[in-house]
Length: 158
Image (cartoon, rainbow, N blue to C red; front, side, top):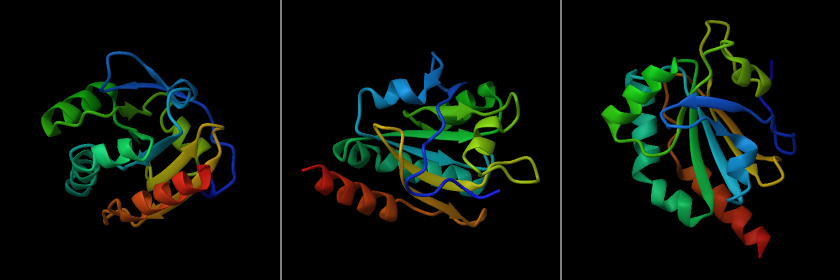
């Protein structure tokens, strides 16, 4: 299975997790030009914790560039809530638990071991993938490429 690439239509989804209400991609996109989806293998693992903490530290920069952050793993919604709370993560951390990995499969990032790839997507308001990147599972991809691409996309909009 290959991850969705640039130009692909991003599948809509509704998932629960760290937020009080379920999150639907198409509804989030009604209020913002871009959504950054960050799929990650497992809450509370060291690399995933580091990755989501870096996203949280730069959350204001993403908002400045017109993007809302959403993180997704196959962990249960109660795990996602505890993970977000423990790490002070204010953006949605969603559970792709049941059916296990259904959203990750639609995005082409479900691993054979039952976890999601460490993958990043920028999706525009038309639900078109404008950037995708799959990192090595043991490596935090950081935010530099995401922020650079969002700056380019903002410049294209002007």
